[in-house]
Image 1: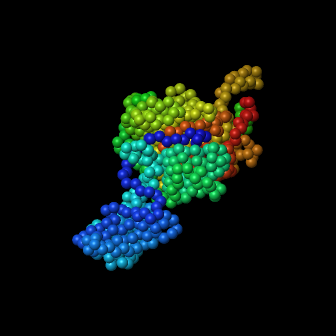
Image 2: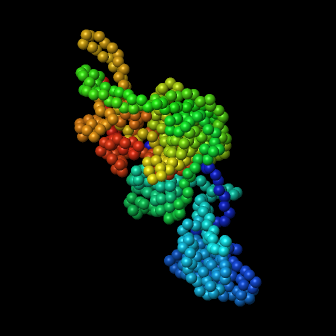
Length: 582
C-alpha cells in the first residue's frame, strides 16, 4: 500500500502562474466594495458609480448594491439601491449602452431611468455568477450587442492568498498536489480519503470528494488536508457529520466550477521520439542515469496458438483428458542506442517502462501506458528528503492512458524475474515526479487515466519446478514442469468449466498471465510503501491499496475479466501448497 502519511508536494509543474489583484473572502461590516474604473462612468456633467455596501457582515442579513449618480458635475448626488442581495464576493461593475445602464453584480440588472428603477436582465447568459472566478464581472458593447468578460482562473480570485507561496516576489501560485476530473474509481464506486491520508499539497476535484472515518492515522480516523481543497461538487462523508476544521485545516471550497483537465500531450509535436514505435505492439524500457539514458525496445510478435495437454493427475500417470488451446504473443527485445536526456522532453509511440536517477529538467511521455519499474529520484536530492532546495532537477511523466506502479517483469538482458517496486515498509520506494494520467475513455470508465498499482487482487499459482521422476523400470530423470495449472484445468474457462472455484471444492488460483510473473506461488499482497514527491493528475482515482475482500469490488463470484477489474474470487492471503510437488 502507499504510505499516505509521507505525501508532500514539490514545486514541480508544467507552468507557473502569476496574478496581481486579490480580494478578501468575507465582507466586513460597513465597508463598501468597489470595482475601480469598471464601477464608474463619466460623460459631460454626468458621473455615476456603483458599489457593494455591507451594512452587516452577516450573510443572512440585508446587504445592498447601490447606484450613485450626479448630473451636475458632482455638485449634487442621488443614491438608489439596485438589489438588496448579491453574491458577497462580488464587486459590481457599471456599463452604459444606448441610454440603458447595466450593473453586473453576479446577475445582470438594467435601468432605463438613470437608476431610479432596476430590472433583472433578460439575457440568461449573464444571470449566474457561478462560472466566474474573478470578483468583477463585466459586460460591454461588442458589434452592437452585449458581450461578457469572463476570466477563468485556476483558483477563485477571492481566495488566492490561500494559494500563493509566501515570500515569493511575483505571488507565484502553488501547484496542485492532487487533481482529478472525477474522484471515483474506474468501476464508478466511491474512492475515499481516510485516516492514513495526511496530505500536504493542494487537492482539487471537479466532482464530489469522499472521506471516511475508518481508523488509522493521527486525526482520530479522519483524513487530514493541510493545504486548501477545491471541490466541484460536495464533500460526501461517512459518517455524514465530520469535523470540517479538523479535516480541512487550510480551508475547503465546494461548488466550484470545474477546471479543464489536461487532454493533450505537447511532446507529440515538440518532443524527441525514441525508437520506431507504432502503437500498442511496442514497449520501451528506459533507464536514466543522470543526464543520459539507455534502454530496450520490445516488439510484440505475431500471435500464435499454443497447447497444453490436460491430465487427470499432473505429472501425468495416466491418459490425457483433453487439450487446452490458447493464443500467445512473444516479445522480441532489442537494445536502444541511448543518448542525452537532461533538459529535454521525449515521446514514445507505445508503452513506456521507466526508472532511474534524473538530472536537469526531463519530461517523458507515451501514447500507451506508462509503468514505473523502479524508483524515480533526483541527482541533487537524497532519496527521502524534501526537494524544495533542488531547483535544477525536475521530472514530469505523462501517459495518454494510465500510469501504473509495475508489479514485476523479466529483465530483457537476462530474463531474471524482478519485483521492482515491492518490498517491506522499512524499505520505501521513492517517486520524485509529476504524474499525468490523461487517458479519456470517452464514457468507458475503465479507459480513463488513473495512477494505480498494476496487478491487484492477486492469488497464488503453481510455479515451475524441476522434479525427480522415477519410472517403473527403476530409472530416474529430472524433468522440468511448467504451466502446471494449465495441465490440470480447463483454460480458457467456460460456464461449464470455470477457472478453479471454491464452490467446487477447489483452491482459488490466479488466472494465467494475470500476474506479469505468472506462475508465482507467493505473490506480493501488500507492496510496501511509496514516498511521492510531486503532483498527481488523473482523470479518476486509481488504487493504491485493495483489501483482500473489497466490499465495493464489482464481483466476488469468480468472474475473470481483468480489463473490467473482475479478478476471480477475493484475494487469498495464504499460499496454496501443491498436492503433488510439495
